[in-house]
Length: 308
Image 1: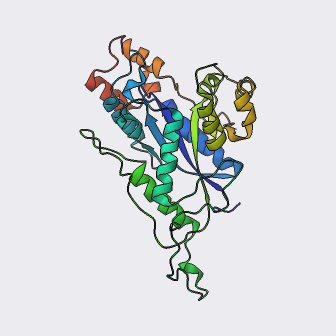
Image 2: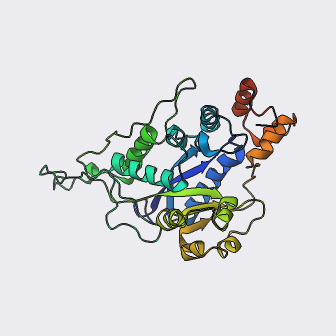
Image 3: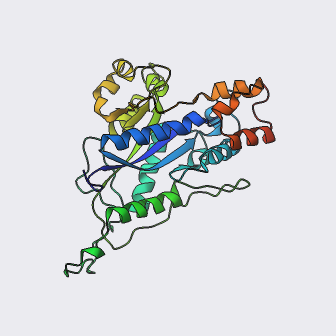
């Protein structure tokens, strides 16, 4: 498959990130490597979306701290960014709402039509103007060098990501995302398929099977319209988990399970274990958290008490 025929993917991870761990970042890396190896996908961005303060989880520190720690954790990455939109809302947002926000935002900013995993849109276009213009976009002079290439498309999408969903607010002040940015031009780009996929661990997948925990309409949208990339952990069997939910079975083809080799050393993903290590002064905390995050936690005196 060529670059333009592959599905271009943005991975979105929602969660408390209390605090964000090395394992969280490695989930992104493992998912990207696996999707690339399938030959069907090109991952062009990753988004970390910390949950709102009103989520009500015991020991959840302020989003101001969690956003800062997330940004410190991804500061060396050239494709994973932190988005503060979820934290900036008046109240807690569902995972479905967060996915829909980013889908709508990408539509407005890039002019892109996002599609499902197995039912791609007829005309997924990036940079396509809303109204047809009488201006001649391409001259019939056989000068193919003037036609945008896949590399240029990725550049435009990357520019869009850096401006709208990959915001790195300063430590002392968080800048709100510019939802009214308009990066569209009159130039028509080569057609590509762009998707936002929810990135999660097998524990979240398993939570779909708990009666009453998730709104079924939301589950239909999350799995049916968007799709999920699952990174197994703790020996969980995603196939077995999916068999316990009628919705997961219904949209099984929209659930991509990462299957990689032992070349991926997986750090502890659990934020709970990281907090316990901090409270007990366990030196192994360096195995769970990156040093800039540890430094920030110690400086801000976070997670020192058992209460969080």
